[in-house]
Image 1 (tube, rainbow, N blue to C red):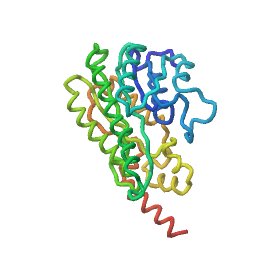
Image 2 (cartoon, rainbow, N blue to C red):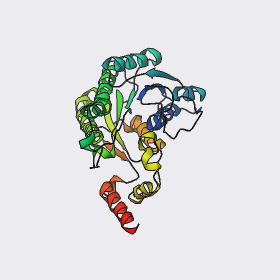
Image 3 (tube, helix red, strand yellow):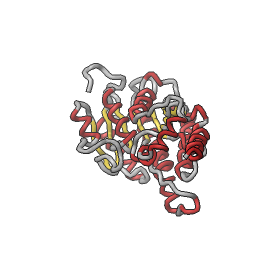
Image 4 (spheres, rainbow, N blue to C red):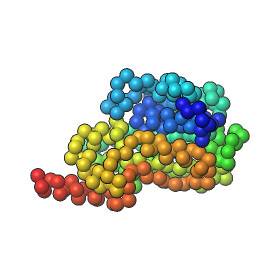
Length: 285
């Protein structure tokens, strides 16, 4: 970690889904800016199918290896008891909670006719209810502690561009993320009087285990990039940098924002544009 004072010195962050992808990049970025980080996940090691490579340290160990302060907590975001325990761990181990990042999520692509109700409910439980539980635990902790900066705390939710546009075969995921977007705005209003900011970051098609299918399909990846204003791939670090900003004093008067981090994919009517590109490709084949 840097020897220079960071923007988040003295702060404590909780990141769910911290072992892989956007969550791992976020935990590392928060730590680089001086925050102590409670890394929560179902396992400490990166998920299979991701882009972390082999032989990498678990996130909390990597932070400690670089001179930062971190811990790992097993946490199922669908369990109220485990989420309460996660919040208590952060306070007991690190002293307080200033930043809470609800990153954990799943997606199970399926046509609606083929999707069992149990699978639909599981996606909602992880992606929507899990975010709600995280917000609840975070708000309770942030209200009860003295402020370090202008804001009493920062809650950052992971939405998705899929929650703002139509995309076939991910109805549960799209519904859950659309709910996260609405929840973010509602809680920004509800918690504003307590000085707590609530914002969401909406990632695009980044190289994570969740998006592996796109990155392993050259034509699909080319279609995505062709429908992106900045026609080059993004990285999980781009999401992490946006979250660091929203967790800092620089964003103390920003709340209720849904911030796409997608290279301009959503700015140009992304899904429609991508379909047009792919249809053109199939006609040329």
